[in-house]
Image 1 (tube, rainbow, N blue to C red):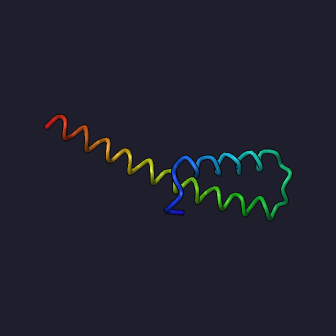
Image 2 (cartoon, rainbow, N blue to C red):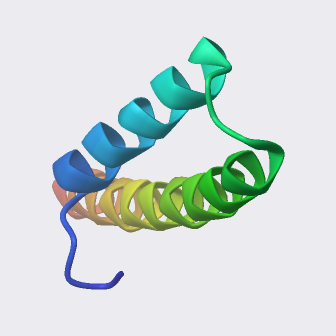
Length: 64
């Protein structure tokens, strides 16, 4: 999952949410989609955290 961009991960996560909300998948498939969605969510969070740290560093460098 490291190679997938934030935008790709978010798009896949949105597709999973749409499928789950439609309620047309089996319980087993729902659990599998949920697991994949959680991995994608974590991946997106990690990318956002790294971006936030970079922005904080830039801001600190500007005020120093």
